[in-house]
Length: 88
Image (cartoon, rainbow, N blue to C red; front, side, top):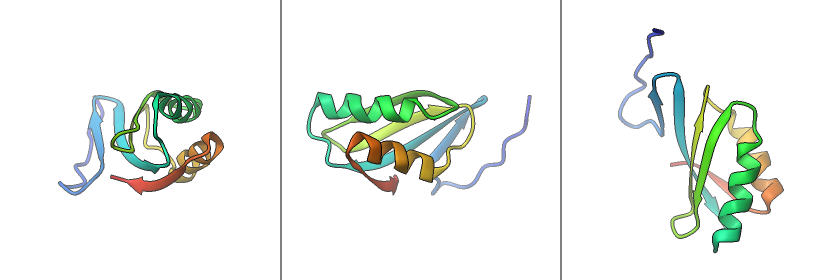
């Protein structure tokens, strides 16, 4: 089992086993179609195992096999037609 370094309580990324969970804030989502478009684009990033967008909060929770490059997430969100604010 690989050891993980705790980055402190203010981090927006959680590590469980080998999976990394990160929550992002996205603006412009208003409905289920928006959630699907954002989730689909982020899911296409290499290493992403799941992406769940919630329009009412503007949050997208992403689980991946390794830490994600924020610019890759930004590009995916832009491709879907929305704007990445940053990590929550």
